[in-house]
Length: 121
Image (cartoon, rainbow, N blue to C red; front, side, top):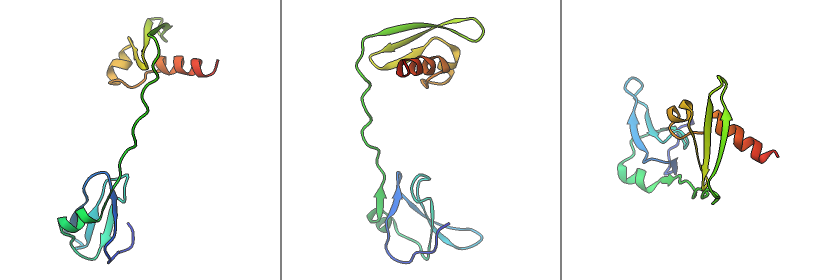
């Protein structure tokens, strides 16, 4: 927790901050997203108008677009002997292994292996 602040201040947060009073302590807080200021102790309730005025929005910068490459395919032997097909289709990677499917689009160890080999050769 931070020290009590009594002046108008900026609240860094991805999402709109909100005012909250502790049930047992009676202490007022302004709650921001966890990657912003978090829970900030304040000396009073802040109205939505004040919070909106003092909200310092955290925004993400534009993500880099995937590198445009031709479709490339690799075959990789898995740890139990199964052969999986890894595809890089214009910067979008996929693998035929179950872990890739369960990971909902996150890179599996087979994709990481191919990427590692590409960068270190």
